[in-house]
Length: 268
Length: 333
Image 1 (cartoon, helix red, strand yellow):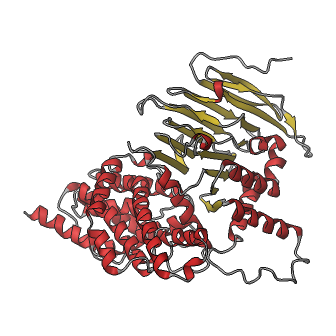
Image 2 (cartoon, rainbow over the protein chains, first blue to last red):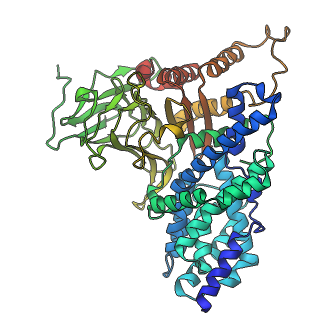
Image 3 (tube, rainbow over the protein chains, first blue to last red):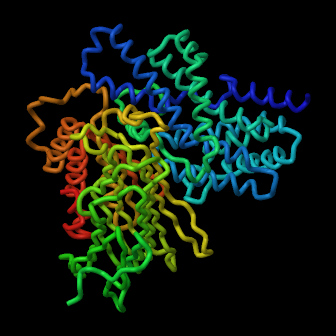
């Protein structure tokens, strides 16, 4: 009984949209994707918003599906690998290696910035709040200690002095480690990670005036989103971190070219 | 006169190239061996027109029939001694033929180790996966440590893939295509640390033509990776040009202005021509400087668009031709 209450509590905490990770600042390439669409279809959009909006929604659905697919193939293996680690003394090194490898595998500046900024925010919340909710198991305790060490490492790295060997604080391995330290079962961790991403993109879409708030909620509640996430977890949930790969290469192009947008409301 | 066809080893698909250094500073192709279906051809090395008359070796990576039949496996090992320079080329796109099923995967693997100060230029033709092909490749580059924090190896490597044979109605119609590029830094302790990984894996997941929808009508997609002191200037060039790309969704207030066009320098004029060309052909690209590397990603509607864009960029900057000779750009012609 106590065990399941812990897990439920952790799940509710980590799925809360008020969790101050700063996810609202990132659109994961959606903004750039839509901007590229507009230049492609010409400038007739300015005259007829209804038609444009319908098109935008179609594009948005394709984007959401592909963005989830790409996140699942590139980041989910890091989440699950971190969540499976723990229980021995090497766990801190595992987290450091996962961080290095994720950093090496994310050559897109915009995506790195988004991942590091959210990872650091998660570490700050961990230190100030979540670390007290460590689950009463050996694995959770060792992960909890390792995440706390990572929080110290991030603070000790002065800005501008970062080198190849320094710790970055990328979100995916930290998310897995924090969730496991709080006693969340691995299947739920993966589902939560992907659902949080879907929420962040939907919220970005609402603010970018692609969808209304009710439409956004209906996408979030839809069966097709659930089914898609389940398929992705089956496909990528057991992939080793070193085999994580980009599955939607165009996503990198959108993300990378976000910096070229004339006007931006998001950080990615 | 030695035969340009090298002696063969016994394992099918295996090959090795060792570019050694004869004291004091003469690079020499020490071993170059291969086995069916791989074939290595090395024309005589060329001298660069620079002061030191640097000797650059070239090896063509060939496969019988110009590609890989289902189940073929190629395993190539390349070793570059200190300060040597090697150009690897292909002769036309690497075709990937139809596989009888997803359990028959053709594989290509290349492991390169680079001693300090050596340089590899690998600008091949694109990989061309036919309908229902099933393929995975990996290129792994290991930078060996130098004695006193001196310069490490240098890399200018390209990995690109196209949508197949559009004339035959193919458009990303393969079953599976994977390509992994990794750069490791070997540490004095013997361990290797991952510096950069660019791993792509597209699988149709059992749904025919499901990959096409992800590609957003692009016909070619590629990654250029630059690393090392010799290629710093080229890296800066890509970063600077990326920053100077026209903003997306911005109004061109300055277009059509009558003053100002005459007194801009030639480089600026050429940039304007390039950017117009990019817009016309639909080539999209981005560059990122991360972890001592510069990674350039590009996508275009056709192989020709991508090829021509990359050639113009590399020729404008000039480092590749200066460091490796004009021949290094042969596959981009």
